[in-house]
Image (tube, rainbow, N blue to C red; front, side, top):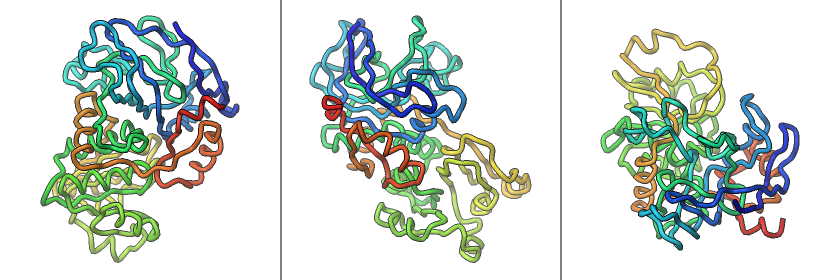
Amino acid sequence: MFTVKGFAAQSATAPLAPFSFERRDPGPDDVQIDILYCGVCHSDLHQARNDWSNSLYPMVPGHEIVGRVVKVGAHVSRFKAGDLAAVGCMVDSCRHCAPCEAGLEQYCAEGFTGTYNSRERGTKNLTFGGYSEQVVVEQRFVARVPENLDLKAVAPLLCAGITTYSPLRHWKVGPGQKVGIVGLGGLGHMGVKLAKAMGAHVVMITTSPEKGKDALRLGADEVLVSRDEAAMKKARGTFDFLLNTIPVGHDINPYLGLLKLDGAMALVGALTALEPPLQGINLIGGRKTVAGSLIGGMPETQEMLDFCGKHNIVSDIEMIRIDEINEAYERMLKNDVRYRFVIDMASLKAA
């Protein structure tokens, strides 16, 4: 075991503050990483404040981790000291169920082990995340980072990037398709960039004309303001696929009207009840599908990073110091970030 510094929440009402804790020494299959940058996901805020009633304390958040390998176990073949490496939302799974064997560890039948706010398989020790100096992770759950990308802006790809890439790939988004990205935030801005790079005609669907202007900068071909009834009516039945990134319960019925016959809408943001209820006729009338998608497995995560390397795609970020994390959480509540905070973990040394 060795001691590392981090920032932790001690309760749902306590601000994040300096915290020292123990990491395991690297085993034969482990990779030890010096964390250089860690993205700040909205779920970090939810978990730290126990909004989902499943929080374990003390909690060191952070599951958008990039850094350099400092040590590897004897059986590690994919990494060596000095390599760039990344860790996302998972650090383990059962590895033997059908989803795990298919490289879909996020759907592990026993439930995957989260990078934080979870318990290690075997020891039941709490997992602690990326708001810290170093992390030790089994090599299967570590991804390689393309050398050409801006490392600090890579960090959010490990959650926002894979969360949007996975459904776009699963529903085979590509040239000749009209794709709508619903909601422009940390997820939505990545959806625009990725769908555009896949060759689709990309439409940002937003309640805010102001955000629409930024969507065009990010690569959207068009903007559809969902509060504009005339524009929504004109767009009915014209979309092949919708990626819905809105993070709260909302009325999805108007969006279903935009889909063509056999069109699909994938939800990646809303974890709570949808209101008002889904109207069955909106599905039945066009053999439409409403589905959900959760991050991505490790093979797809690596595929996503390689795709981003090929197309030079990273997140739009705002850098912060670790001692600014509580202020960043308050700004996130006000949607005051374009589009992802990233912590410079070098600032932890002075915290």
